[in-house]
Length: 132
Image (tube, rainbow, N blue to C red; front, side, top):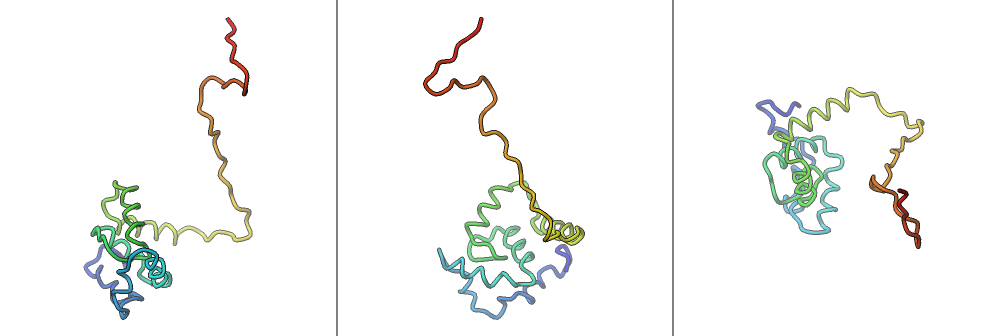
């Protein structure tokens, strides 16, 4: 179901937690990790998460993310105007791309040097000499 339609709130009827006690998703601390388990197999997880992010819902587990995780995501991406649109476009892109070959070797990212650019540091115990 597309996010931007007039029926965009109908996702709640398909939510895996629709018949559960809402209090199970509005818990604190470590209990939130357990509450996220309900979301793993939910068919409308993305819509639920987008709803919580777009509406800045501060409490509870939504779309498999805890309060803290959502706050961190919102802080990292203040540029996002519509999470529903962003998540829908990501979903479409994922569906359009071919599935990954499980037998292909994993790609590793080359790390860049942690040393800052600039003059070389002297060896331990030595001094740096200037040639002039």
